[in-house]
Image 1 (cartoon, rainbow, N blue to C red):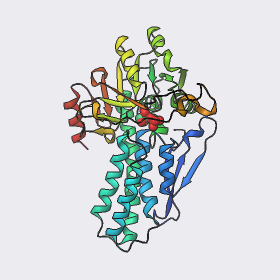
Image 2: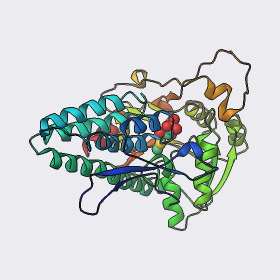
Image 3: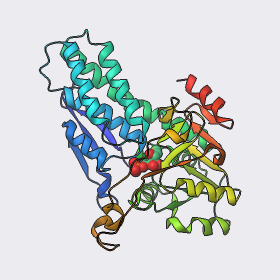
Image 4: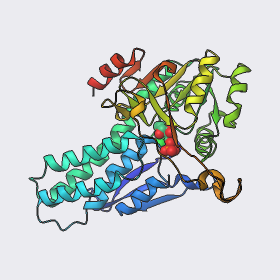
Length: 355
Ligand code: MRU
């Protein structure tokens, strides 16, 4: 793998706290590979909001580590008081982005651990929370690896996968979700090619997916989003693999804006459409995708992306950052427990029960 997206770096060698978060600043790619180090929870909030760290699983890891960053310098006299502070930090981090459920999943996990261990002395509780954040990271690596193993069984040598946005190593702790099967297949000597949608407006496909696949020596071809239909019609795509930001109990899947369109195109061209995500992206509390909150982003990302005006000043803009692909368009959902097929209400429940 080319790069570790996010890590907890302890200052000393005996304990995890004090320490800091080290993450790739994804806004600087592909031009520069720059790492940001921070132990300030407000900077973590900004890093999530501005997409320095992005991709649902990586956001979850950043949030978990952000809670530790927020309490490690606390002077709380008791574990209970420290647990309260952790809840406050989590509440603030929860306002950074609304769609990726991994953010809330990780924050709930951290506040749950804080509450359950409120009887510890503050120093012990700080260390316990740091251990949990590192566990969130390490589990994400393992889940993505397992997704890669399961997903690789769907790939044959010489096939071409279309992907949208970046659901690669950069979007997770390692390996990625949609790209994990490609890396695993490559390790096993099975060569597959990738077509990457550029992914307007913030170009995660062009800037990040193309970059990380090239770093890994995978054959990748970049296309503009509006080229996908033609590329499918020309018979260049064997299957579609995308990630997810939130999957409802019925299989409806929120992912980067444009994914729904790709799913419709795949159906029209009889191409299998796969969603790959860890169970930390499942939201079993939502009956359908109708209930998934969709983030709206600033108009400048559309009119003046990367500093160049591409639309008249003052034009009205509507910019949802995600869309919801109905379960009916999804061939299978691959998680760390295996390949879930329709009816998803049943197969996702089975996968989720294994957690
Ligand atoms: O706005 P982003 O870049 O955070 O959106 C990311 C995506 O939509 C990814 O496809 C999704 O989070 C899955 S990442 C494994």
